[in-house]
Image (spheres, rainbow, N blue to C red):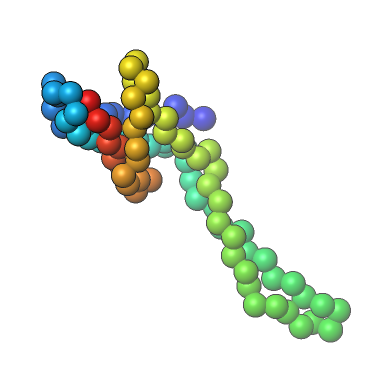
Length: 89
């Protein structure tokens, strides 16, 4: 399995107390892949149900954000490849 990749950037190099801090995280994993399972039920007479599909992800990714001051980071958005977090300085 491939190791996930990540890059991160803050909107500034320094902040005054109380300033909003925005963190952008770009991430991915070469071997993460979606999977769709399709189910059809058929009885003894040959009658079949409509197909039902269920989605899953093999090797999903999880992002954890923390800093050495114990600040709370709130996720504002996450597209599956880019996540944006906010905290207060």
